[in-house]
Image (cartoon, rainbow, N blue to C red; front, side, top):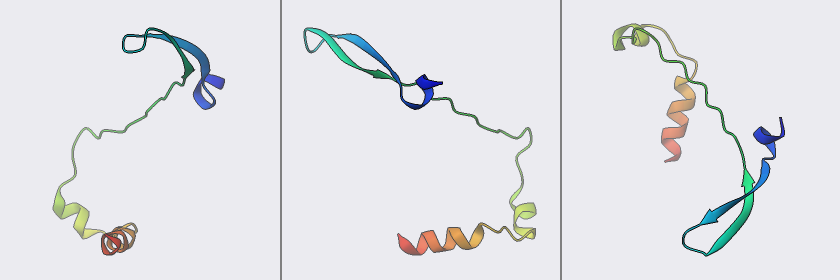
Length: 62
Protein backbone atom coordinates (compact mmCIF):
# COMPACT_ATOMS: atom_id res chain seq x y z
CA UNK A 1 0.00 0.00 0.00
CA UNK A 2 1.72 3.07 -1.29
CA UNK A 3 -0.05 5.46 1.10
CA UNK A 4 1.65 3.71 4.05
CA UNK A 5 5.20 3.79 2.70
CA UNK A 6 5.72 6.51 0.11
CA UNK A 7 2.62 8.62 0.61
CA UNK A 8 0.21 10.01 -1.94
CA UNK A 9 0.57 13.36 -3.66
CA UNK A 10 -1.98 15.93 -2.51
CA UNK A 11 -2.53 19.64 -2.11
CA UNK A 12 -3.86 21.58 0.86
CA UNK A 13 -5.40 25.02 1.03
CA UNK A 14 -3.37 27.07 3.49
CA UNK A 15 -4.43 30.04 5.57
CA UNK A 16 -0.98 31.56 6.10
CA UNK A 17 0.12 31.35 2.52
CA UNK A 18 -2.58 32.25 0.07
CA UNK A 19 -3.27 29.42 -2.30
CA UNK A 20 -2.57 25.73 -2.45
CA UNK A 21 0.44 23.95 -0.99
CA UNK A 22 1.62 20.72 -2.62
CA UNK A 23 2.98 17.77 -0.66
CA UNK A 24 2.30 14.17 0.26
CA UNK A 25 -0.03 12.56 2.74
CA UNK A 26 1.09 9.40 4.49
CA UNK A 27 -1.08 7.14 6.64
CA UNK A 28 0.46 6.00 9.93
CA UNK A 29 -1.15 3.13 11.83
CA UNK A 30 -0.22 2.47 15.44
CA UNK A 31 -0.95 -0.77 17.25
CA UNK A 32 -0.79 -0.84 21.06
CA UNK A 33 -1.32 -3.58 23.62
CA UNK A 34 -2.87 -2.51 26.90
CA UNK A 35 -3.19 -5.34 29.45
CA UNK A 36 -6.47 -5.68 31.35
CA UNK A 37 -4.62 -6.00 34.64
CA UNK A 38 -1.37 -4.12 35.25
CA UNK A 39 1.53 -6.10 36.67
CA UNK A 40 2.72 -5.39 40.17
CA UNK A 41 6.29 -4.30 40.91
CA UNK A 42 6.95 -7.39 43.02
CA UNK A 43 6.09 -9.86 40.28
CA UNK A 44 8.20 -8.09 37.67
CA UNK A 45 11.24 -7.97 39.99
CA UNK A 46 11.02 -11.65 40.85
CA UNK A 47 11.91 -12.58 37.25
CA UNK A 48 15.12 -11.58 35.51
CA UNK A 49 14.18 -9.43 32.57
CA UNK A 50 16.57 -9.82 29.62
CA UNK A 51 16.12 -6.13 28.77
CA UNK A 52 17.40 -4.95 32.16
CA UNK A 53 21.02 -4.88 30.99
CA UNK A 54 20.09 -2.86 27.90
CA UNK A 55 18.23 -0.40 30.12
CA UNK A 56 21.25 -0.10 32.43
CA UNK A 57 23.56 0.55 29.48
CA UNK A 58 21.25 3.20 28.05
CA UNK A 59 21.11 4.93 31.44
CA UNK A 60 24.92 5.07 31.53
CA UNK A 61 24.98 6.78 28.11
CA UNK A 62 22.82 9.68 29.31
